[in-house]
Length: 306
Image (cartoon, rainbow, N blue to C red):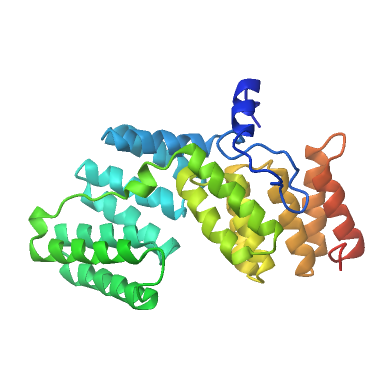
């Protein structure tokens, strides 16, 4: 990982809530996602794209998002903002492709459903636009005015309805909470999630982790903890997918390697876990907490705590 400057580390340390720590071998005192970046800096590329999108430099934004999608092709947030960049360049078919991928990866992503419906309407694909409107109506019924996204869903339905009534006049809409989220806000969401994980509140942690993900894109630390929380909730396939995404973004990420190995132990794949341990031993020339922790799992064939 690239070493941040001492001044930057100091400024970020001021953001860390008292008592915050990383769960199960993550390494207490690790910097937040705005500082802790992999060698290929997908998080920085994502923020570069967001900043370009904010000032309507759509070509620059598209290039940045395409680089991120090169390592995380199914990331819903990156596909969504890549769709916005394509729409800004009047490439409606390109926008449609990205919005479709965003919805496929995250069926609850209100903004992606909205923009996909508007794009379908602009392309004259009314039945598909109406299907997206029905998806939004389903999300509204499920929410029943009680979820955090209630107002977003209501606004999205109104926006899509207007696009269907006058497709040629439908405007490109963006999600201000996504595009203008600061790195500090993302760090705060991340540390909140870590605290919730340490308290065993995994479902609540996932909400905060998704907020951090909207700020940082496919950051390996965030993806690793999304995997960890899902694993603790027994969603092993989802957890494995996020560990794989984290390692695609940062192949030498020790935390993702350890947690993926632990998941393999839990699923009875000791050979796979030994492969992960061998990787850690290669990464940690002089030993590290992640390798020591996973070694205990492998030797016992189960969680050391069980």
